[in-house]
Image (cartoon, rainbow, N blue to C red):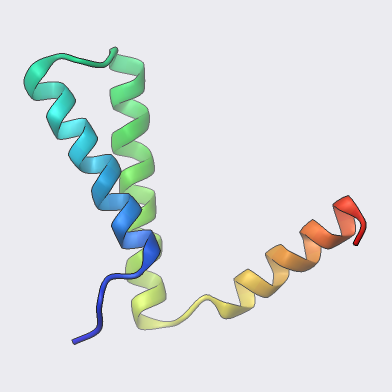
Length: 71
């Protein structure tokens, strides 16, 4: 079995922040919605990366970054 990747880690982190916040009422509703949404997106990307790999996406992202900001 493979270990968690960075995407799964951040997804679980944001989801746990959401769960902590709804239990104790620490954050406003808009931030809670953002946490659960971004957490689910990170978990789904992590699951896709676990099965298929996203190296092409990473290369495209780096090339786009280089074209936009020079070097």
